[in-house]
Length: 394
Image 1 (cartoon, rainbow, N blue to C red):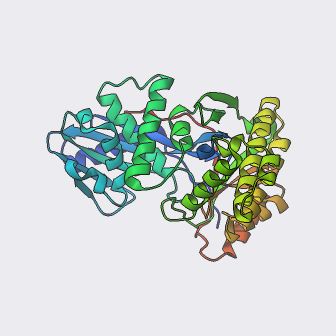
Image 2: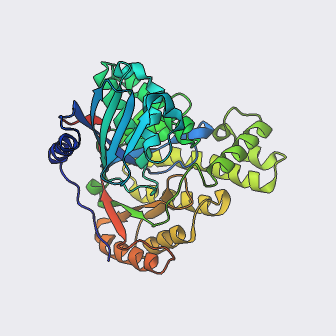
Image 3: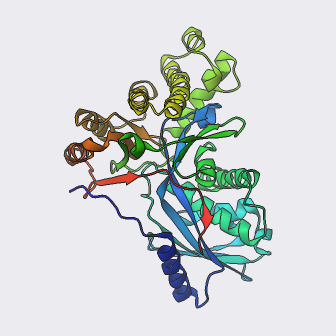
């Protein structure tokens, strides 16, 4: 049976997490911070290709309660993971498992952030892990913001948030081992409520574009397909290498700067050409999606979302049978558009549905996923709204 997951209000969540921290350590935390997950509305695999992306923050977050201490060790517990974490500061880069996200942030910031000592962190999250909603970036950005705030760093400015995004990206790339771009962390830290962020991933210049679908008779739904992905183990790195090879052959510093004619005219292996074709067409679709949002043309946005998915399905080849079934079923039930969001090989779909069609789309997706191997039980249908970025909440 499908369900919409309820979200606890921030004050209650912060209070409960602070109480859990005190029960664990015997002391109150120095504060509680949250950072949201994100959905990329359109613009997949453009962040490391020098293109534009259009993400927004969702109303699900990773939360951390934190206290610094003199012991040279990072200790952490989580409501989502059974195993506790205890990592000496001298071994941060060797961390594995869920604690690597925390260790990577502390390593990237430098232990001087904590005065040379360690830190206790209690973690909670309602961002589905492995679902393409940036649960990792949310956790890393919440931790980075907490440590930077306590160290007195200037985290309130856009430049300060961009710096924190680079810290979180370095943690993910170096310690966790996922060769990601900068989009997720930037969106998590700089998002504004009721807006999507049209982000130039080369310059990090961002335009906040109004995203208020309910005012135009639409809703945004996120569906976890039950096929978790992991950037460090799937074909992400292979696709990135193909894009870099195509850019070098065409002679552009980033593949998103190439033209369709340049891609078709270059001497490329056919599979590399297919990857490049997705990137240049996706860059054009993302620009058109921004323009559609400026004009309130949600029906145009929907068509662009679907075209984006077909490009990933056929040219980038990073979709799955379950994901394609969700997209097809939602469109058949009346959705204006649907696509995979995130790096691919599983994860979540984002659906733009007319308000009147939400029930039919939900039922259609439920039927499609229940027929797919490895379907989640229950199917997780999240109605989401564009929300604010990371912040201190307690």
